[in-house]
Length: 89
Image (cartoon, rainbow, N blue to C red; front, side, top):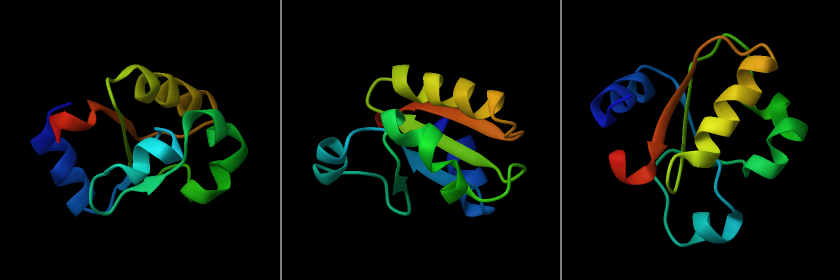
């Protein structure tokens, strides 16, 4: 997805999730995002709310956000979008 598509979804109410480590998050993140590191995501699914809420994922390069998308889709989330690298915002 493009940065403009991601921004449009977030402005319409999608949850923006940074799946990088807390250290990466502390060094800078997108405004309005929440941080749930990929390695904690499966245990923290309840924090994402309804499984039909739109969720936009990002990380440093796109690898972890892609893994997170697959994990969420397997868990029953139906509107998951992968921005990929934070720099695409």
